[in-house]
Length: 448
Image 1 (tube, rainbow, N blue to C red):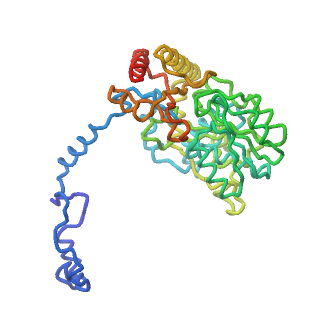
Image 2: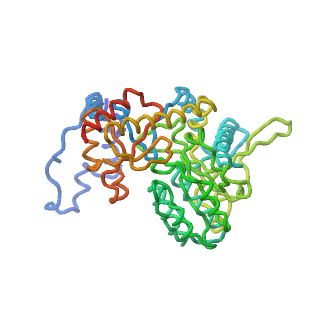
Image 3: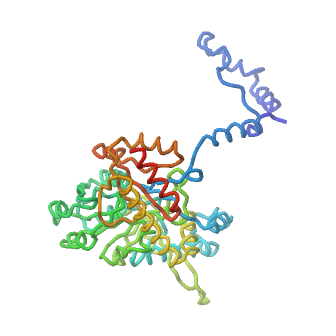
């Protein structure tokens, strides 16, 4: 048996190949290389392990890690640990879904097409919008695509984006805007939300869109009604990025007059898994229907009157000349969109509302416990499941001390902005217990 069973070439194979080309050994192939430049000793690497030993070695390395399965986590910042019904893995592991990707042939893809259609429908219900596409790579690319659509639709070159939008989303936006020769102006924050005065000061009839996040990167709720009034005072598009779980409780952006609502479906059925892959969603008003990037699945009937599903409105980037395309995204996250759909279906409308409510209540409980422990809260407005504390010390050092106590701390905001040194973004989801929250407040208070 070959010792390295994943390398199929045997000694007999090697000799046969050498005989075919007329040489006796591999060394003969190297005769043109001067002797003094050849590597004439054994490489200083350890001997290869046999497979059982190799598996044991890597399992030992894995046991040195500590994950959210071992320690309670207060990390959020765009990737969240939520309850995932066990049925999600069961459904997405079925071969007919696991291997299905491009449902171009509706006659053999009805299951996949219906699953995508249901995803679109549920996103529309959450966001209050007319239609949604079949998903995008993640929330960040979805936001950038929304801005590109707005610029193309309005034929204007300026984008106003709040600094309370996720910094990674703003970075993706800047990259896309550079390629399209668009100007991006970032609006400062005040008390944890978008500064309305500065927004008004930068607003003009040259603005293509105004972009905010709700709940925003700091967990705070934006004044959407006031931002919408500024945005629609001319013909700019109002773009809102939202955590879809929060929309199970909050009034949806569509009710505030949003033109496009984007976000990441990761809170529904998609594990944290080292930050990806995710599943972006993209919802819009009917007037923008033909400009929405990606795929749309529509409902129809066949020649016998039976309900069926097809890809629809396909005068888009994968079917037209590149110079007429509205987007470079002609794909979707079919499997992760399915996971989100299964999770939303299993949890149900009331369940999603209950999950969202628990996020708010438990985050507020931790706020109160931290106040009692002498921790300073930076902002005092309404939040969803994240909020900022000012620790007055390097967050990286505090997180090391928390980790030694068996706790994964929050996000160090100094990583995105050096002026925020000492500030920690904390996240509390429905999975945190009262005991864990009390323990965290006690340990953080003791460290400070």
